[in-house]
Amino acid sequence: MINIDPLLLVTDRASFNISVISITLFESALIAVNFFDSNGKRIDRVLLKLTGADYTSWQADDNYLVTYVNNYIYNSYIYA
Image (cartoon, rainbow, N blue to C red):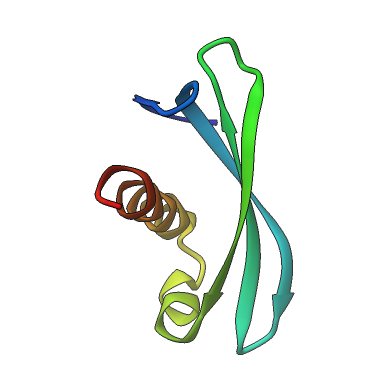
């Protein structure tokens, strides 16, 4: 699980985990991002699809997914 600074929405989002749901070789990946509050209770889940440059940039570096999800969080919840 990756810890983040809590985001105050309806409840705080203190951490998240990432699971790969499916991969279409040479094309895309579908990932699930589960958000947890500070008590470890899952409070939200979003599905994200990596395609194009995002998919090819991932390659074998799982840290890329963490950065991708962090960017999603800040673009979707903080700067939205």
